[in-house]
Amino acid sequence: MADASYPEDLKYHPEHDWARIDGDTAVFGITWFAQDALGEVVFVDLPEVGSTVTKDQSYAEVESVKAVSDVIAPLSGEIVAINDDLEGGPEAINEASYDGGWLVKVRLSEPAQVDDLLDRDAYVASLD
Amino acid sequence: MPFAGWEMPVQYVGVKDEHLAVRNDCGVFDVSHMGEIRTSGPQALEFLQRILSNDVTKIAVGGAQYSVLCKPDGGILDDLFTYRLSDDVYLTVTNASNHAKDLAWFRQHAEGFDVTVDDAFDDYAMLAVQGPNARRIVGELLDAELPAPFRIAAMSWEPAHPADSADQDVPVELLVAGTGYTGEDGVELLVAPESAAALWDAVVAAGAAPAGLGARDTLRLEACYHLYGNDLSEDRDPIGAGLGWACKEDTGFLGCDAVRDVRAQGNGAHPDGLKLVPFRFTDKGIPRPGNEVVGGGVVTSGTFSPTLEVGIGLAYVPVEHATPGTPIEIDVRGRVRPAEVATRPLYKRPA
Image 1 (cartoon, chains in turn orange, cyan):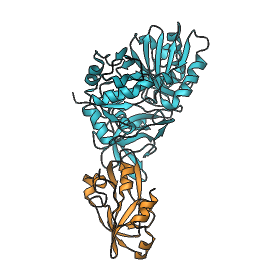
Image 2 (cartoon, helix red, strand yellow; image 1 turned 90 degrees about the horizontal axis):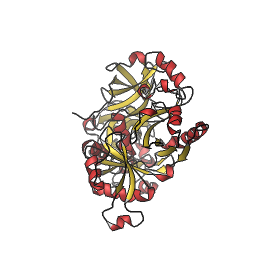
Image 3 (spheres, rainbow over the protein chains, first blue to last red; image 1 turned 45 degrees about the vertical axis):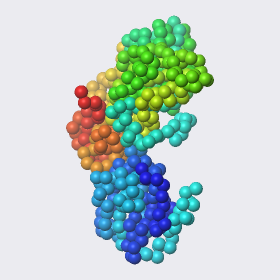
Image 4 (cartoon, helix red, strand yellow; image 1 turned 135 degrees about the vertical axis):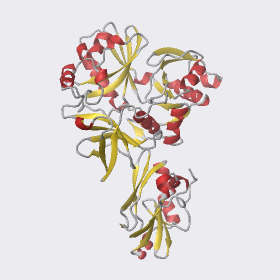
């Protein structure tokens, strides 16, 4: 498992999700803190491409041996891609939660919602 | 993680690694949360025969037996192992969350018997050393031959380092039982709490991987061992729970009439027609306790099997769906997942 890290270039949702914003699209994933709390991820249930996600609501499930966790959407939009590699290699969420462990790519329906998210320092402060 | 008042590690390095260490090598669990009740006296046998479901006369000195503690209506108060330490001294190991209830039950029903029922909870810490190399590791540590499976023996341990013996009597007296909860060979060590940490350290230094409650649960579920509170409760009788083999109604145990009536139905199910079966998922997903079985029934234990790499569990299903191989469907939080009733155990070490 990787060491704790919270990249500067991401936006964070208090429910331990991150968003990498690129214009009107964003990639979502769960933070180091979330994967550490879950333990080894063994199963990921992602939505289908074309479905919509709503900010602050669950859009996926991530399961470890011991627990299942809802994944909360940090922003609203339509799924344009999902990380198919997680089906055969869900441990990527533990090993590279901000990289190979990404979950979905979303075309944002309300880009202004980004202003509601936390920057790195505010998120890290919330973990104390 | 607080568990029945104990601070217990769910995991040390990770559930999967700990699980596989036990399957392939050796792991050690601190199971000191398990309780113990010592029953002694001239009528210890008669008394235990009255309250335990199995035939207690079959336990030789140095032997062990699994049984169920039943209410008069057949409901399961606990499932437990009883060891015969000497002619008229028995030690019964209780589940942590049931210990106080069990002890009160023992004492209440001991009236009229010439027995002494002692709460031995504080007398023992318990380490379970499990896996194909467990016997070798513990055997070398104790420098002695270990009791066979389902046997128990009083043994002693001479700590190798003086520092290990600073706070304790040397040699350390302990009970070694050839039992476990993982489906692997191994032993359980009952030792005075003040010696437990040194013994733990010695077992780990000899090569056992520390393992937590998470791996204990995945291991026992692959082996299809019941967990009280999940698969067993006061609302369930031993027949439908698949524990009819541990009930000998002819001994006249408390609850025997109710158990006899359920058994007489002949289908191995509860009176409501539900029966506990192991199952495995045939596609994606992980079952969890409380998931409903489509068409009736409920999952009582469920997890991801690190050995089989699929979702597995135990579920109460209608008896007509209880035959191994029967396809069933489990509603996992609104998503229907295909599964198949399996034979027990779900995992068995290849011969």
